Every structure is written in structure tokens, then in C-alpha cells.
Amino acid sequence: MIGLRPIEVADAAAHLAALDRESVRRTAGPGPPKTMAEFERCAAEWATDGPRKTFTVVDVSSYALAGTLDVTLEPEFLAKRQADISYGIHPPWRGSGVPGRTIVLACRYLARNDSADEAVLRIDTDHKSDIALAHQLGFHYHRSSTESEGFLDWFIQAL
Image (cartoon, rainbow, N blue to C red):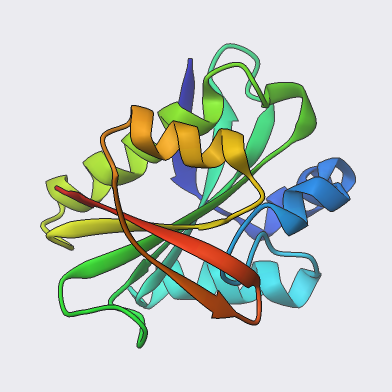
């Protein structure tokens, strides 16, 4: 069982210790925070109700930090009332349903707060398991693009 909570600066040491190359490269967008300044910026976004919310993904039974999740409301590359979701799950929690549950919780957060009408996942075309997960969760292929992050397939789901 996992949960989400707003990221805190105090989470930096645990997240940075668990961060691996795969966590950074598997996400489109800004990816997980990698410096103390980025953790401070993420906490400030929560304090000022900014458009980007970074969550800590928490293993509820052990309180261990399982990864991060970003929800960005109406970024410039999306339409009005669309939110971009990106996540980075730490190695021990990959392949165990945590990524899917994380996305479901993000969609529930967006719907509960009436923050968006659609959720968007932008996934590197090489990450076949992430693309399969998007389909499994009911996201529908929208388009492909070439961006600074690489070749991305876009998937959309109504909230």
C-alpha cells in the first residue's frame, strides 16, 4: 500500500540516496528533484499553491520513501484544464504495482480538487512497460512528439 504526501525539504537525503540513473531517465519533464535547491523549490510550490505539485510516494507500511510524483497544472505545452503527470519510482518498488497505483492516486488528487479535466502522461517510446501501464490504466494514445527529453508518446485520460 502506498500513499502520497507533499514533498518536504527533509525528504532530500532519503530521496537523493535512492535516486538512480533509471529514475532520472524514465520520466518526461523535469524529473525528480536532484539538488537541495530543487527540494526547496518543490516545497515552496506547495506553500504558494503553485501550478507544480511534487509529492513523495510513501510505502505506508514502512514509511519508506518509494519515489516522487509531479503533477503540473496547465503547463504551456498542454491545453487548458490538462495536467501533466510524471513520476520516478525508486528501484525496490518498481515492478510491484507501485507506478500504477501512483498514477491512480495522482488522477484522484486532480479530480478531487477539480484541478483538471484530463491527465496526460508523456512516455519515452523506448519504455514499453510504461506504455503498457498507461493502456492498462485506461489512458489513450494521443500523439507522438520529439522533445528535449527524446521521442515521447502522449497518453490522455479523462478525469
